[in-house]
Figure 1 (cartoon, rainbow, N blue to C red):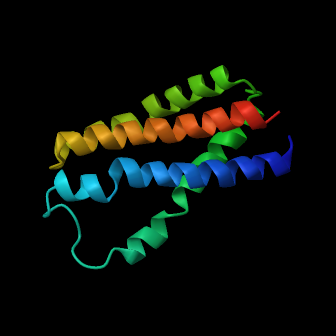
Figure 2: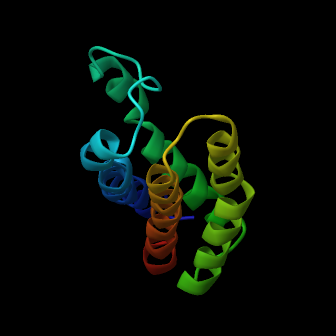
Length: 130
């Protein structure tokens, strides 16, 4: 396994997927399609600082697992991305939506954002991790 390429994938995909988090669940959707009583009031800086590394963790673990499984094509990495999405984030988001007051637009956007995040790192793994 080429560690330099793995680190480059983690950093690059982490930055791009952070932007997808902002796009799919960011300010515009957060303001229009959420219920104010669900969110904590006040400064969000601490929460943003604590959660900002998480896309890098997601990308890092995905890239490492794909490398260990020997998935070096885009199609096989994309299949793993969809499988991970169906196993983890999608059921969690839908369960949260069933029990918490979340607007449908936010739920769909959040679920699609997770799929896109996983597909970004899958494409990066397929292209650059050889």
